[in-house]
Length: 298
Length: 169
Picture 1 (cartoon, rainbow over the protein chains, first blue to last red):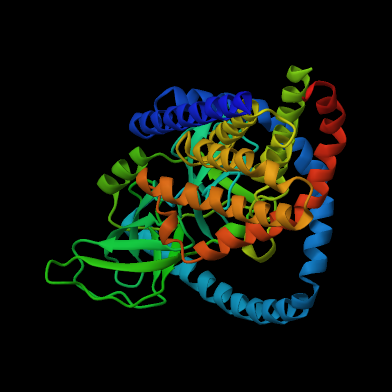
Picture 2 (tube, rainbow over the protein chains, first blue to last red):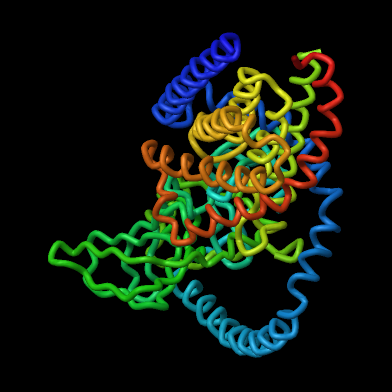
């Protein structure tokens, strides 16, 4: 009985010590702001686990696809109908876009502007994610060897996914735009006014505009303003109409343009840096949406 | 022999972390929008065959691994898993092989671990507490863990029980 009591006492002491250590580690990690021993350990763990994760992902992918297919079979017919309708809409939009492209080309010729070059990008596959439902990160199978560096924008065919926040030679970690640590300079497409979108750690984004003169309306599209990421990438859609307050500050919610829970392949834009935005501003006042290169179904 | 049991326990934890970050990752198997917390379940399963101190160390290591491969500050899952393991160690003698009590304890300890993560995460600036799907993300993993407890407990029992018998008092 006595030995049992002693053992539990030791366990309690160890428990309290471990909790204290964990609190200290967490405090240092938060304070280091991505520049401490924690980052080195994360990169080491990522390097060690990547082969295992890629192996399991490769083996489990067909099984997951089968289970997913069976689970969603009831919704496939509805999806098919919806996609047919969407195809008709997109064909109509394509015709309008072609006409607009012609107009833009004419305007560029009149103003003597060079057409925007296609931005170089790297297609990558997501092979892993954080270990809990609360993590807002993904791991991709491309890294430094493919030209990826910290800070680059990650997109899919619908818009901005997030940014690279950690990279090894062959893998990289993407912090999603829904993470509170990610802020994106944006422009409301309809009013052309600028603001900042910040992740909420959930499915939604917070849009803040500090010099708003016009209200934003539910359904307005928010795109990148070119300050940190290439301009013109869809970030999200405003979900709540909001008007500017006396101080011209405006706060509302937006839903991400990308369905972040269903990501498989993404593109990392490697051919653009924020310095390009500075040189662009001195050259022209016309903002032209970027053209994303085609490939791998994106 | 104790070292072998510890190594085996850590092996189970590593396998659980790999499966959690691949098979149960977003976009893969997440029924109703939330995955099971396989790492926590595995910690609870292997801890039944470890001494109290070893059980806490395994839980702490598992938590650190989850933190290292996740996006949260280092140490948060370590706190959550260590706390869940501590409670599990304290109550395991009362549960023994009672199936109903085991199921209840898995549900309650999974919930405890996740609630602790959210609560401590709030202290460190995470805003998971404002997640509109928070209740779902807390409850569903607990439910899934109860379902997965049968195969996970069986596997760990198969591998660890023979080793435990040779040294346990």
